[in-house]
Amino acid sequence: MQKLQLWERYKNRLYHHAELDLSVDTSRMNFPDSYLEEMEPRLQKAFEEMAELEAGAVSNPDEQRMVGHYWLRAPELAPTPELTGEIKDTLASVKAFASSVHQGNIAAPDGHRFENLLIIGIGGSALGPQFVADSLGSPQDRMKVYFFDNTDPDGMDKVLAEIGPGLKRTLTVVISKSGGTKETRNGMLEARQAFEKGGLHFAAHAVAVTGSDSELDRTASQEGWLGTLPMWDWVGGRTSVTSAVGLLPAALQGIDIERLLTGARVCDQATRSRVTSDNPAALLALSWFHATAGKGERDMVLLPYKDRLLLFSRYLQQLIMESLGKELDRDGKKVLQGITVYGNKGSTDQHAYVQQLREGVANFFVTFIEVLKDREGASMLVEPGATSGDYLSGFFQGTRSALYEKDRESVTITIREISPASIGALIALYERAVGLYASLINVNAYHQPGVEAGKKAAGTVLKLQGEILDMLRRQPGRDFSCEDMAMTLARPEEVETVFLILRHLAANPAHEVGVVPGEKVWESRFRAAS
Ligand SMILES: O=P(O)(O)OC[C@H]1O[C@](O)(CO)[C@@H](O)[C@@H]1O
Image (tube, helix red, strand yellow):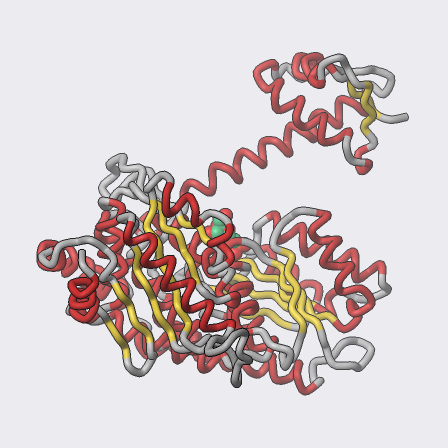
């Protein structure tokens, strides 16, 4: 298409929301002008399902749950006065807790204000808080934020080393909706040990965000933690960033959570429109449907031209892939759905994988995110007439056209600046786009049965490890190859798992397992170290 024709298409298609100062440009998606009309019946059905969801329908039937993340920023829309009250009370508690911490009314045991925040959680109980913390952090933050978001011991040691003696002024927020996630439990136990080693009483440094009566809830109340804030079964982990899960860490960091919620609320209003061309989330969902043939046939590459949006692709990876990546549709038909999401930031990626995007396998579409405001205040000129930010903008525009020239399609989202409101709006925009797209492809976006399989398998491995350790200790003088061990445990079919377990045990001192290397690595022999 010629440049002037593209300009006409740009003007015809550009969506702009004046209050949010947010635009969605679908002009570089090559769907025909008739596309919206063709998709209209499916879209109207998706809008209807969304309205039912917002009114309190059990939209996650597999788990028999309502789906209420939109109520978190408009509590008056919750289906019962009790829920409205709970949401409002929780927001008030978040603000009161954060302000008590900032004022030193809730203080470290040495009487000093808490200065650091160690957030422990995983998946939806970490990715949203991490994205918000990273995108909106500044030197003026009220507290310095750290994360344990895995059960990697070395990762935790690294964080603890960074905190160093600051641990005595560290508040720990343990976040788990279910309250039983092992990675988070392990992080909590490791943190507790670090506090105890420093002569500190963990409970006096800890607050929980979790579901009522969960394992974590019970631990927090038995041990007398500083407080517990609720998570509800009608908020999914990956859409929990505007609940206490995201709001408590953000408020403690000093981020204006009211503005974050306002941005989300205004975007929610915009994305409730049943006029497709006037609904930015519907335009995104339609673009995804066009790009992937509604079957995940192409990947979504996220290219924000802003360092502060670096973690957005990681956040969206869970939101989109855990929501859409489903074996079965809502009628039980095998569909193997999903959209693969990856990305980093521009223009950095121009010096990495953009080469393949332009010239290699054409199995993707791009979402560019453009931020108009370069920085607070004026920029220096890096050469006559140009700033660093002008270069960033130039590289964004250059990559968008270079890709389009090669028939690589893209959507561009433009926001004026990075602020609590614009981050709230981006979160709300994608939550709604995912919900609408899930309706278009007829999958349940709100459950995650596939994740359970990995968790169960990990449980089986840990159980087998227990049996192996038991056997090694009962026969301390004996060397076992993995095959001997599998046979002795009467689990010959598990020999590979036995080998992997033994090799890991021998590489770490905790269980005192010794190894005599074999000619081939799998011929090594293992014994309880005497
Ligand atoms: O908040 P929780 O219950 O610890 O769960 C953490 C994450 O684990 C998952 O269930 C996947 O394992 C995610 O959906 C969730 O965000």
